[in-house]
Image (cartoon, rainbow over all chains, first blue to last red; front, side, top):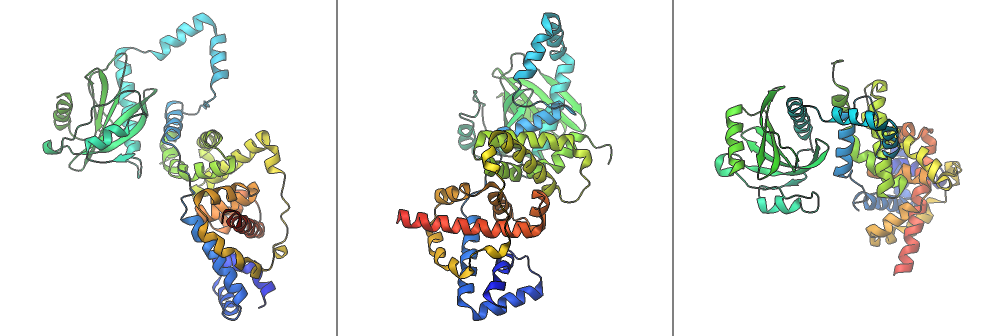
Length: 245
Length: 176
């Protein structure tokens, strides 16, 4: 093999795309050719520089939440971020239609509570998928609380309840009930507890048991708390009482 | 299984690849705002077309949708970025021996220079390089995603690397 033949194969060799026979051919040539050996080193150097220079972008949490909100709220429909044309269409429906829409968007108390619980459970389940549980991992309330600064426009109370058997695991930004919400993650033995917190005009309270999960909604210092877990109702209620303190 | 909610399927098939999807969109679009639009639109398309996913390599499937969404967007918004490059034969690449002088420049390349070097590449070259070097995809996967023969992928990668090395060695001279 000469350098000319080597040319197209070198990249494939460095990329590990050659079969054994071709690889052996290339290695045979490299042993005898300083120029091609230098070229290979250069390619490997480029490869490792690209790999280790932190060039990959991660999807922003806000994008992740927006996509999940679109998909879970509007199955089969699509709604893009540029929603202005839709808005104009809605406005064109006229005052009567708009009033009807308002009524549709604000159903009665019970179904609102159910819908909220449903959303909270979906969010809880999503958070349990690998890599989704926490944005900030810390059992230190003084690390988790400041992390939310600037990400949301309210300040959730963050306390560690490790001494009560509910250690704080971390925090996450989530999207619930059409709001960005703070999510605090606690553990009870093997059970994960998500606590969603956001300011709500009308605060729901009560316990709902559905799909194998318990959801406790309550008012804590004027903020809506939605506590979700597969933990049993009694222990989750104990935990809810700790949050009230 | 067929009774699985579409949104659950979506979370299992599409969401695990959101970082890869966003990374590709970001490198093709060149800024956060447009990348988010592209990644979001591609994700919603994937949601609509979940029924057409036949199992197998979900990452390639998602990235194909992102790629197509991004190129459609680029053609509409930045047609000059996608003037088709000539995918010449691989043997027109310069002698590999000529590459050896570039290697020293690489050790000094910092992230910003690398970033600028990648941005300077034609979009098809950049795409091939991102998928290969950052996402670790095989030639076959890249060929499927970009809908070109494997030979073209090889040629694009080789030329992308050559341009990158040249850019970096020039910058090295300038900054030293």
